Image (cartoon, rainbow, N blue to C red; front, side):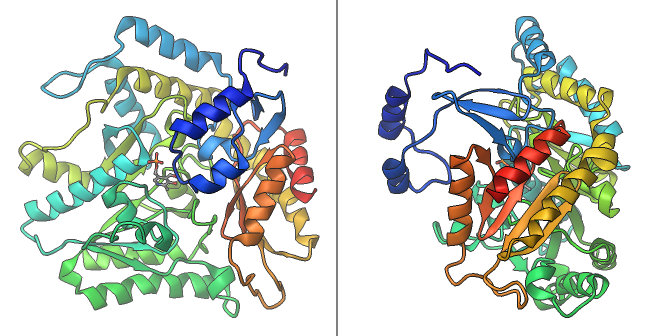
Length: 446
Ligand code: PLP
């Protein structure tokens, strides 16, 4: 953990401040407070240019599932870069890693999702889905089915279509969004909305908001419903087990497409391969990204079920959509090796049977802190909800201020946790050790 002497912190901070517009950043605050230059990483830790060792409780941005410093992934990239660094899959060509990855994904994803459309990010995957959904209903002779329903606090990306799917009012405020054709319903956020109900009752009531919205919009105008199995960036909102079966019933009854956004939940995070496996969801379309390559390469995919795939293949003609780097051979080779690591090291089983329960127990130990209203976890994703008054579940008046203070305090204390409003969220690499879970919880408490 020596300081990387080749990095001069001040130089990089100055260059960064002068020329780098960061995503999701208040530029004035950044200029005031400065940046930390991250120089290297290993396992569950990252190092900054001053030599500080920081525990990464977020696996980057919920993505480095197999941990940092994996030589196998670097070797897979190097080998593929030397053999075929790029060739596209437009115009009747393919490459071996893209074909192998599509087949592998058909094997590991839930039954019925047998086709992969590749892109580079979760946002692009969801943009692709919006186009697929509209194209599908046009092909079916129901062009009025345009509206896609999603949820408050859902996060689906930052492009114009994917941000319209998001249920984040702050994001919508900056660009006359959402676009027309997007509608939002309440999330299954029992801590906020369901204090007087059992989880079973609350899950059903929350799901039925979808049915009410369908009636409000008109059943023959609704195209699809999209949901993350667990809402991640919206504050790790874990639905009661009664929620998704009812959602599924409603989607079937009204014929609307069901989209499960697995960008965070996929590849072991919930203790099953996919959140759909944890909640018994059978989606028509499923975006995946992040854990697909553990963040070692930018790659995403839309997994397409038979209902949509058959229509596209049989009736669709040319689908005028795709990206230069769709099915990029290097990204695909890395994703394949990443999946091989998850299988070889039985990381999903490890989350379900060993480290997930330990993480849940340890994170719950924070419930003795007076401002902790609730701790919720599933697999290796968790939330610590901070409140003014936990008995009455009263939130702080300036929502977000306490979370920001706690996040900054953790970071100063060399722990990465994120704050969503006043909810501290955590999503470490799936390889995290018991000692590292202890370190995470001890630093969070400090
Ligand atoms: N969908 C979900 C559930 C996400 O959490 C994210 C990113 O956090 C996205 C989509 C967007 O992915 P990306 O940032 O790769 O565009």
